[in-house]
Image (cartoon, rainbow, N blue to C red; front, side, top):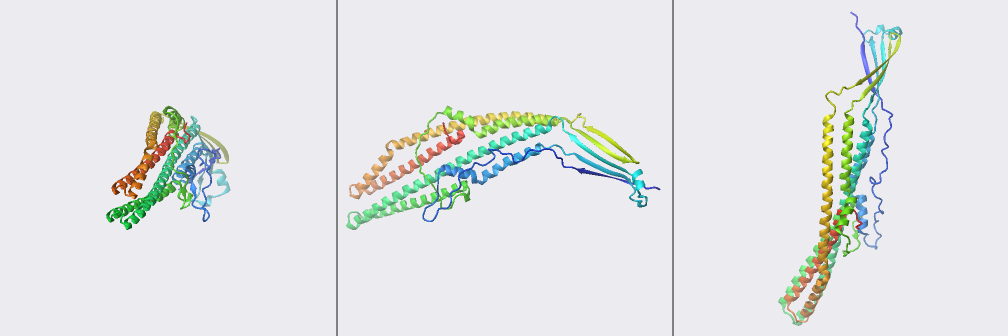
Length: 443
């Protein structure tokens, strides 16, 4: 019994030389802003490095690791654009048939030329419906949404840095007040000690004053701790390595009026808020996905050309194949992406409403805090200081009781602390309005 040869088929995938998008395409929004260099460690004797609020924001935009991680999503999306724009690879096929492997004695040039069969072919998938163009457009629209989302992360980070910067300023202002109060009360204790030695006051009154000094010392220690912790929290937002350990902030809490009306702020927010822009671009991206799925419903054509050597003859063969779209016409994905368009449109409306609400809430908060500041500046600060000074002067000369003096001291401290907290709340409200509007430049 004669044993026939065994057929072998080899498929080789050849990498296509089709054009692709350049992955290094520049994008202004994808790149981090170019801030001034981080402050260097000062030379001995020059004091700690001090940064302004603008410096702090730029350092955070450059060194904050969470933001840097978010920015890589833009580069990932651009890489997906490259993938979306690739054409299918051609397929190289070859085979050899009727080789007498199990009867090697029949191997000869004549047998190979007249009895064996050799095939060499190339096939290629032709995409219909402009699938590649729709894939690219959908990827580009997705990249646009990603850029706006990262820009919104920058907006949120800017507010967080500004808020933490204000906390540092409040802590330093509170520490300064505690040190002033401690020094002033220490002077009072020294005077009362001389009066006690001279017999002008009782030991009981002198002990009460000394015990009250403990409260001032504890306030100063707590204020110092709050300052250190606030600086550490701010450093984490800036990027731990971006500033030296002994850095400090420049400037103090100060009142600066903000002019403008609610309608102007809302109009600017609608034009600048990156989260609203991302929602609007999301509608465009949903439409692109819908068109892509409709294109995917078109059946592709596979063309193939073969060269065959058999029985001393050289022949060529041509083939073509296409799916018959009887059952699968991609109707499920087409319907899903159609509903996704409605979803994106509703999300855009929700984001638009959120922007309007954010601006209104921030504006009302600013107005309320401004009114509180005006109350303090209308005379209450001066009255509290005057009351404290009068009580201190009278007590040191025996014209007022100890309880009256301590009560006036507590009232003064309470008013001063409340004013500093109100001032910090006002400055924070300004930053909240900037965040709500989406820009640090208010109308």
